[in-house]
Every structure is written in structure tokens, then in C-alpha cells.
Image 1 (cartoon, helix red, strand yellow):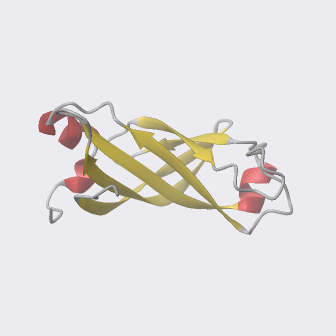
Image 2 (cartoon, helix red, strand yellow; image 1 turned 180 degrees about the horizontal axis):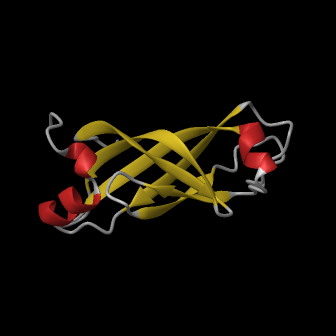
Amino acid sequence: MEKHIVKADGNGAIDVNGQVSPVTYTVSLKQGKGRSYEVDIRLMAPRDWLLQRGFERDAVLVSQSGARIPVYHDSGSHHGDGWLDPADTLSIELTARDDSCTSEVDLMRKYPEFDGADA
């Protein structure tokens, strides 16, 4: 079982086909393999807002640090292919996993949300 070291909330923006809206998101940190860190990113977005902007399966989260992180709609929809449609729930979960941080300095630069969070 994976052990999350710490969770934190952030404020950023979601970018769908060049149309941007404020969004809150959660980042969860855990120790990766070797000296790396793994960060799970999760946010909820309104289904209708996404559909109106041409969303299909992925968008971009602009995090507090300004990093542009691709986020994806899980393929848990009733049709199983990951594509969003009007029959899906009103609030859509978008997620990502980032294992690019290989030091605490990298981690804090890319995810300032963890600054001051309890381990």
C-alpha cells in the first residue's frame, strides 16, 4: 500500500483549449523510488463547463508555481474509454501523477503548496 507523506491544497487555474478558469486542487506527496518523490494531483471541475469548452479527456492545470501540468479524466465513465460526455456526473475528477522531482529543492520549487505542510 502506498503511504502518502503529506497532502496540501492549492489554488491555480484550469486551461481547456485556451479557456482558463480558477480552480482549487489537492496535491499528495509520497516517497518514490530511489531519491525521487511522487506527487498525485487531484481536482474537480464542472462537467458542463468542461464540455462547453470542448474538453474530451485532458486539460492543463496551471499550479501556484506557474507549472503547467497535464491532468486527465479517468476512464471510469460508463462507456469506459475516458471520454467525457453529458451522461457523466456533474463534477468531474481530473488527476495526474508527477514523479519528475528528484530532490526536495525541485519539489518545493514546483510545489510550494507543501511549504509549511505537516509531514
